[in-house]
Length: 129
Image 1 (cartoon, one colour):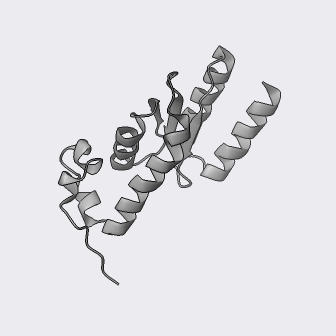
Image 2: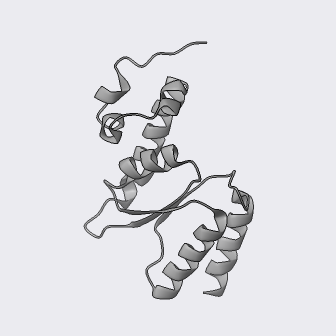
Image 3: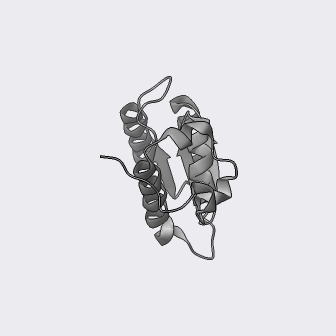
């Protein structure tokens, strides 16, 4: 099954903000890319308020972290961690400072730890702190 966006991705109100869409994104299934944007928009709407939420994007692929932060920065302040260990450090620091993240977007495939391991450790941090 083939799918085509009804317009050029660079003309899309969200995708166009990314600027020159990386070649890898152009090779993605257009529906996957569109679905990703729609999911991100709908998931963060509840966090949009007068106080800017903190968002942690845990993603080792730069193209996806840029895309996610471009969309999510409308709703809060984004921080990117490229590895599971960096995500754990950022999360723990945020908890200790008393300003935890309101939303974490966690990639499952990371270069050092898998997303399941990261999530289990995050939950342990929450229980202790």
